[in-house]
Amino acid sequence: MLEQLLIFTRGGLILWTCKELGNALKGSPIDTLIRFCLLEERSGSNSYNYDAPGAAYTLKWTFHNELGLVFVAVYQRILRLLYVDELLSMVKREFCEIYDPKRVDYNDFDETFRQLRKEAEARTEDLKKSKQVGRPANDSKKQGHVKKGGADGGNKKKSEATGGSDDDDNRAGYNKLENGHSNGHHVASGGSRKLAVGNGKENDSVNVGAFDVSKLQKLKNKGGKKNDTVVSDSKGSKLDTKKKATKKNRVWDDSPSQSKLDFTDPVETGNENIDVVAANQGESMMDKEEVVSSDSEDEEDEVGKGSAPDSKKKGWFSSMFQSIAGKANLEKSDLEPALKALKDRLMTKNVAEEIAEKLCESVAASLEGKKLASFTRISSTVQAAMEDALVRILTPKRSIDILRDVHAAKEQRKPYVVVFVGVNGVGKSTNLAKVAYWLLQHNVSVMMAACDTFRSGAVEQLRTHARRLQIPIFEKGYEKDPAMVAKEAIQEATRNGSDVVLVDTAGRMQDNEPLMRALSKLVNLNNPDLVLFVGEALVGNDAVDQLSKFNQKLADLSTSPNPRLIDGILLTKFDTIDDKVGAALSMVYISGAPVMFVGCGQSYTDLKKLNVKTIVKTLLK
Image 1 (tube, helix red, strand yellow):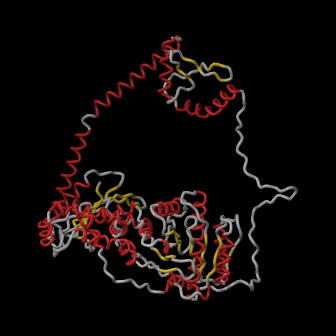
Image 2 (image 1 turned 90 degrees about the vertical axis):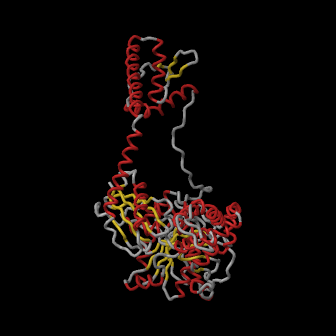
Image 3 (image 1 turned 135 degrees about the vertical axis):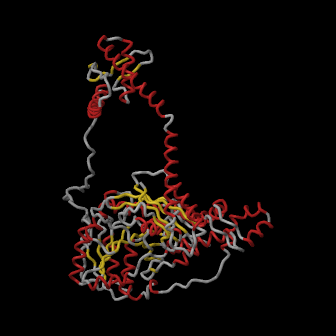
């Protein structure tokens, strides 16, 4: 049953909704669709699944780009209504005929919708009946085969009682087909049957009846033991079934064995000779405004090369006349050359292929049906639409002012907790120190928490940064539970009055189940204010896999009904990629989290904000 159908403008004005349906939707599926699909350039698929407590909806939509209208249908996902797409196209056609931009009341469309709905349902029923015409004959044939097999089985039971040799051959083949294997019977080429010998005895008890699940389960349970027995008797040697012994620590000569391999240096108290120069490295790049050059380049000419063959076919006069008069309505075939050129360009800038394809589909959906303005080429129109889409995606949808959040937490007399997560070798510890340096410049007291108890040297690395920055560090050494170390660090920061706790975690691949479970425990137990995913700008297609699996694991392994996911992204090694800036777009698109920091060097000051205009300009250059 259709739950709701409504029509609204791209500006958000609801023009018409079906009063006949009048079902109160659970949750907010329409708002979610607008927020996560229409505004995030994910409208190319035309379908979205929304899960709410007690309900699961599927939303389908279509656009009229020339009039700026959106048509959305909502129905229960379990029903799988087949007429929704046809109904939306019919409603779109009829409503556009009566649409007037100055009119806001369309109550007279109720009767039209009622007729269109009945027509769409009738067509679907006729289609179902036409598909079911050939089914009875096929079903009868299948039933005949089943009955015949049952009769054969009865004959085989009788032949077993009489001991017929010819029927024994058929019986072995029947068992092989019925149970999926021969149950130890090997059929020779001459047609005679030999039984497998185990422990020198012939297995005469053969199951020739109907398929029995319990017997199959027993065979599975006993299969390992029987196979071992047959092999041991045939070869005359015993198989070693013991588990593989775990690796033990080497003991040198007569020295006592070590229970744990923990070589952490003890915390030193008097460090007069430590070189403390970090405080004099100058102002962090986070507080400097980046100057964007306003030089206009010929991007349009480069994109126009993708549509050059199309213009050659039409001739110079027709193309010139079309550019002057304007095209009636843009069709998908008109957009494909320019979109293909843009997709290839995005992929050369290190954007993941899946993301580039979805972006082009969304841009095509937003332009299809629009009228091309005079003196405007299709390539420039496509590039302008793509530029708007990229700016919308990369612009943060919420506040990313960490200093304001830190002061808000300080007023509540609790520390602001930031957890750094990511895969191996992306620079979590180094960029954690950069963030600490930036916070220190704003008179914020910081404490580090060494929760990477897995990698050798991780505690010493963080301790070195803490000494250079002259900030406290909370550590418990190695082989400890990271979640408990972080909890104790937060408690210590509360007692000491620290404003921010920066939690360093072990690098882990997105497919490492034990480490991902430990990370989920750390996040759920301590409930940090900010979960930062640290990713390197060198990554390409793997960015989609990393972000999606990190979010998926955090959600699946969480015990809370509202699991904590990734809140922001810290992009590292940005100074090594030249114009290959596509990783920023891929990460933001797949996770919806904004890029909050960009690491662009090896010193503490090399941390800056993401300049959206520069990124978009580089992507389309």
